[in-house]
Length: 493
Image (cartoon, one colour):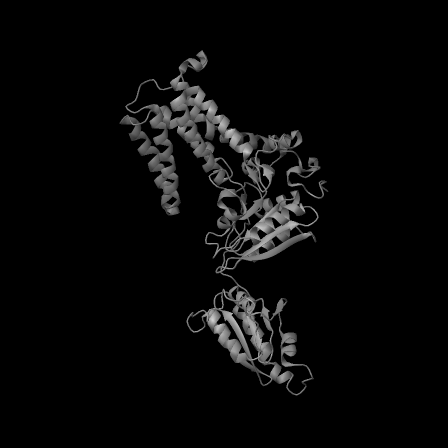
């Protein structure tokens, strides 16, 4: 009989033998090598301890077993009127023990890395937290490095991730709500927020969207979850922000955002977010306000290059009369064998080829491969007449702007936008570029992420917030929290 989906309310029995049959059926004991149980005799009563090898701290499990066996010596002659299960519960040496009487809950805890203790003659079991997940030590994320600042980062262990955040937010109002998602995966998902700061409506929306998820499992962890809580459809722009830095996540908690942590993922989801959340980087806040503002403007310039440099250059090549005399040198001196428009597309796709190849190439080889591709292939392509020198120059500048974008998801969305603008400009000239740019802005304006306007504070306009985006102000000057998250307490202390 398969009880996994038929009835989740099956209660544990007083008979330990019936409970063994129940757990064997639900857990596949005897079939799966890593799921098993150990039977010990405590005060003339059978006690079963269920576990999953590889998810438990063996030293803690052995300590619990030792404490239970010592009851035979300590309590045998001094046994009071208390029942065996009460004595066992009192003797378990652990800071977190949960009592339960539903078989499904017990099975979920076992598969989550806890041990479950079942006493003969008792309809309740004890779940003891002895988890020790395979993981790695916290290290600085590769995509969010800073010159100065902490070098720790989130890992695939949700317990470590909550601890890294709690270390920075020692507020008694910080809340971690645990929800299990997936009929089969039963993935642990944590909603984190500061109770007296975050908007209750936002918290309820996020909580409701997550609880409404009905799926076998979250195969791709946080990315699968994102596609359930926001309506992405065909919109290429990221509607949530990812970070692997605890300091960045903590800063957003103080502002009133809600975080979503998914077990097995080192990335934390920040909600809600706007377009401008994706163009900021922790490095700006690790430098002085002046230096931070300078770095921010350079980054903004790089992002603009990644979107508009190639379409604008193509327009001036097609219609050189638009250029002032001082810039008349822009454009190829000779006609190539391939139309300029096709050269741009091929070169841009070639850069993407190199990026994808670098991802799938071992680190020790990827650097050499990149140099070979950039120098040899580019040089040979120019000599044979496939590309013009200026094509390589402007495609390279555009690619540098793409890689200067802090958010990887936004950089890819901007690349798609750039290619579409190049195509529109090639076919329709000035009108194509203007219409393409207008559609781009309209898409950003019409995008909504968890009831939040994506292009805020430009539309709807908020002068103070826009000033904070353009300039990196000193921390003492941040008097209020961003109004876009509707914080309960909008005053910073």
